[in-house]
Image 1 (tube, rainbow, N blue to C red):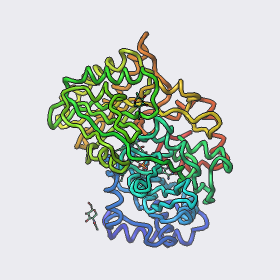
Image 2: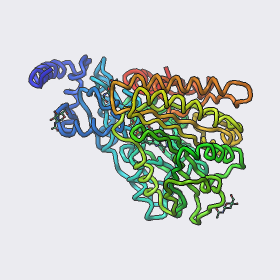
Image 3: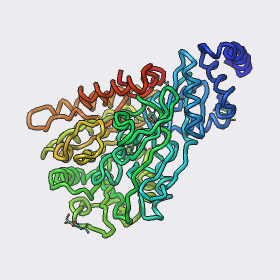
Image 4: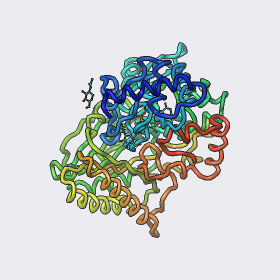
Length: 499
Ligand SMILES: Cc1cc2nc3c(=O)[nH]c(=O)nc-3n(C[C@H](O)[C@H](O)[C@H](O)COP(=O)(O)OP(=O)(O)OC[C@H]3O[C@@H](n4cnc5c(N)ncnc54)[C@H](O)[C@@H]3O)c2cc1C
Ligand SMILES: *C1O[C@H](CO)[C@@H](O)[C@H](O)[C@H]1NC(C)=O
Ligand SMILES: *[C@@H]1O[C@H](CO)[C@@H](O)[C@H](O)[C@H]1NC(C)=O
Ligand SMILES: *[C@@H]1O[C@H](CO)[C@@H](O)[C@H](O)[C@H]1NC(C)=O
């Protein structure tokens, strides 16, 4: 449609829509005009600079492709509330909720031909007077929060990558440098400020709206729009960490080190991401270990099995702060790529990491034969321990630390600079996870946990099913209380749905 005909068409619909505003508006552009009538310049359309900058700020190319009809950019919770009320007077409209835009899953935080609520202007960061919590708008990037707190010797349990958003990360779980000690990011939320489908703005915490409080820790966008997170502040000194890169020749030693690390007594001060990676542009395999030890002294001995592996191509191990580490991890991420993330979880055995690695190399060699520029990465890390006895619960199926400590969280990510390869990336990730789970189910290989980390899951996976039947039943009754018309499960189509 040309710009002119869009304008003519929309002013016609606007005239009709305005007349019929008390009933329903049946087109997306009509709904955009209703919003514009109420919120003016917060509503932006294709071809404007604000619209372009919102679309191009999605981290992955597949989320930038087909544009929404309009994007609404609220700056405060009461605007979000009024926007939700207006949206409920529109029918047949698809709505997307977007914070940091880091989901790789197409349509999870955008609505092609729909209306995207871009929450990035909800970006205040306010320290409570008592110094115990910090109120963080969902639109911030974690790095902004770290920069504010580092200089005070304080921090929060957020992403390990500077530019990841608050909203998706915390509503899906959230794994931080501090997670081996402090649990998931969502377990360190004191209060969620939430806009419900009715437009009501409520608080969910250990005293108020307790069912909603639990449901938001892993339920992502099924219950409401979280506008603000009040996060418990942790005191932290600078700590030891960084990345060591080794060549393919060290792969066996690396697998051995991670196996020993998982089989040793649990140490809540150690956080490790061990990533096997292939760069098509260099036709080379590497291992990159992100190693962190939460102590301001350089405790080399606890991580000796990793730091002594040679040859090292590079090492950035040092004492530093959260913002510096998060910037470093961000710089290591491939950018401007079509990407699929997929995941599984399993208990360690003496041999299973090695067996999975062999499958991954075969998969990667095959992918590189079709997409020479591909990047393929597989990361092993740990599942954060569950909340301690008596603390508020999350939705995840773990009761005590003995259930999480042996678990390995596997993330595979496959990349191409070309849209034409996206279907192959999906197929490759699916075949790989299926092969890994088949292998793990063979006698002696450890088995597979039903838990799949929602923030790493592919669109073809179903992480909510891993929470278990009892929890899902509870989530459904919570949704029936807080969103009786199931706005967040039907109008907000993107994401893993309870239905
Ligand atoms: C480069 C990179 C690094 C990463 N690093 C980490 C890491 O260290 N640890 C980790 O655990 N994960 C990490 N992840 C995964 C990350 O947690 C998820 O991608 C997460 O969903 C990103 O949140 P976002 O707000 O940026 O995403 P978005 O794409 O904006 O949102 C993701 C989903 O959450 C929903 N949502 C967003 N905001 C709200 C809200 N306010 N209320 C209700 N629903 C909402 C959206 O509708 C969407 O379905 C990383 C991802 C990338 C791409
Ligand atoms: C949004 O999601 C749709 C699927 O609903 C997808 O086809 C499209 O590429 C995405 N568009 C944008 C602008 O992110
Ligand atoms: C917005 O992006 C479109 C498509 O890339 C481009 O044609 C247009 O000039 C851009 N407009 C502005 C104002 O940046
Ligand atoms: C160093 O590591 C050892 C072995 O893991 C541990 O016992 C000790 O407490 C650590 N010291 C510091 C300062 O963290």
